[in-house]
Amino acid sequence: MNFLGYRRDNGSAGTRNHVLIFPTVVCASTVAQMISSKAPGTVYAIHPCGCGHVGEDKEQVIRTMVGFTGHPNVAGVLLVGNGCELITPDVIAEELAKVGQRVETISVQDAGGTTKCVEEGKRLAEKLLTEASGINRQSVDISELILGLECGGSDAFSGLTANPAAGIASDLLVAEEGTAIFTETSEMLGAEQILAKRAAGAEVERDIYGIIAAAEAKAKSMGVDIRGSQPAPGNIEGGLTTIEEKSLGCIRKGGSTTIMQVIKYAERPIKKGLVIMDGTALDVMSNIGLIASGAQVIVFTTGRGTPVGTPIAPVIKVSTNSNTYDRMKENIDINAGVIVDGKGTLHSVGQQIFDEVLEVASGKLTKAEILGHREFDIYTLGHVL
Amino acid sequence: MQKKAILIDQKDNVATALCQLEKDDSVQAGIEDYTVNTILLQDIPLGHKFALKDIQRGGAVVKYGETIGLATRQIRQGGHVHIHNVESQKGRGDKQ
Image (cartoon, rainbow over all chains, first blue to last red; front, side):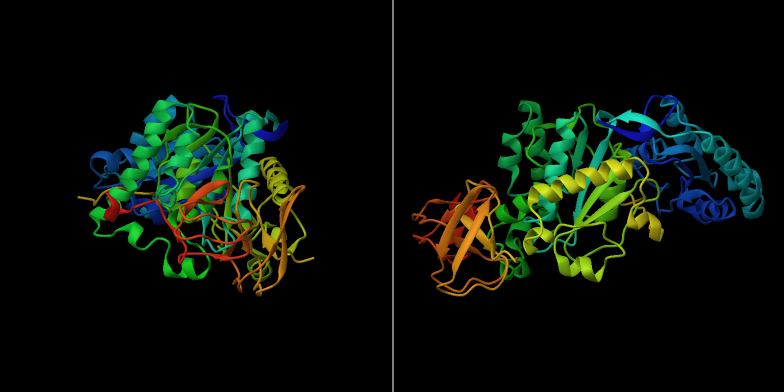
């Protein structure tokens, strides 16, 4: 089975062909945005990071920036810095050179201020756009596809309709030797035994228990006992009885296949098949982590509805119920509420999601792309100094 | 036709109400060619669970094909399954 993708010089395959204008530090974010607005056809991302990070936090921010800007959906990237920051364009460019990404760099201090930097940046962006426009889609084996799975704004139907249907799509992709990554560690608490039973070996089993225990410990260190409030009163009113039940609903989007590997936030998996990425339950940060890990398409299930997209990878929205779909049709691509309405089954919607993933991978635009949603955020670990 | 209840896995001994269900309703819940008929013993609110078979005290309550908790008393087929008769096996610091 194949999709039509963009083959990169380094051998990777993208589902989009973006030229990305990316600030490596918050101080350069307005300049990056200005360059993008003067070079139509480019995309940009802005964020509050790039300086003052230490230790594990610094590693994670750099790993995310490298994974994101070096992504196969990016034909070429212009890195924009200020000049005195911790994470300069050169820090990221050096890593991108190792993975063979097409990169240009610029800094506000070297260029001599905002106006000159924007002019020079526009020239570089146009060069990257010209190069990117010469690349055409070609047949790519589906085994090269990495699907990110995310859920947000969950409701009583999340675990009954959209999540298990997304899980079926994940199983179908894994059966074709593709890769699916799911995340949101704090929503696995109470389901660790079930996930551990599906581990590919002792090391993966240990990693699963490890990340979930760490998420629980982190909550406790903040003076919060997750279990004291899970399920939340609203969940109980909605029919969720135990934390196991709630977590089982969340993990359904990972389908039923063997868990091959546990990766850090924004880490590239070395295994194919189903993978868990350790990370936050915050939607935009999850999306960006999944992309930085290599996901070229994301399936996002939602109960209450959400508008978010990403700067470089398409996000397919799946609603858990028909009310939300009817209310937010312009944002939602697929309605899993038909399972409740008796107009579809888990398997028919699962197949529909899988088919949509292939079409979107081959160029079909998602609702979030058409509306221009480009949300970006990085999951940071520490206080900045 | 609007389905009244959903069954997720053939191993499950509970189904979930997809609308407000009334006592004495006859409800069919199934997956593929496996179907269970249940007469409800109580009203079951939207999103809540009812037993598809008798569950003994201490027996596993199964949804998604997995144990979501243990019955704290006998639950009869058609009975409401919730916090009044099911207990989590997680985070029980008081039992350690």
